[in-house]
Image (cartoon, rainbow, N blue to C red; front, side):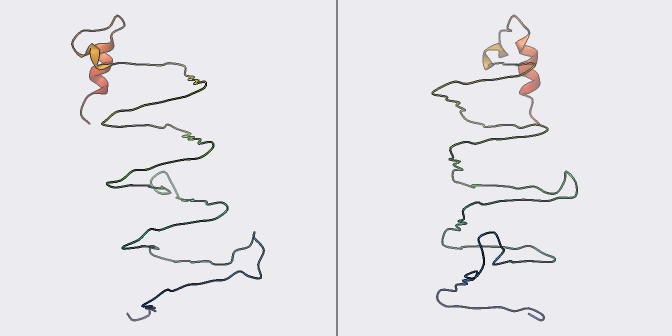
Length: 141
């Protein structure tokens, strides 16, 4: 392509740098002024390894600055000593299948209002009007 550079390597293509840098300095920087950066392994895995890994999306407003993780046709597994989900506005866990929360020690739930409704109120209402809540939560959106 005019104005572009393409590198082909029938075997391994490796870049090693940073031998004379400290651990806190940038050694390899990939920058695209305009356009996307794509890292693709058509028949293999993509691994990102480091002491720490930061994924940061900076958007000008609430329509940009998103991070999207998809495991299409597979599983998403998170494993760590501690996992914190901090949605400053809200968070939502949704499944069309089964859900399970397990704590082998203590489980704490804090809220100013807790609302719980089961499918059992679909035909016979609860003492606190669960049928209306059930209907409002099961509408197709």
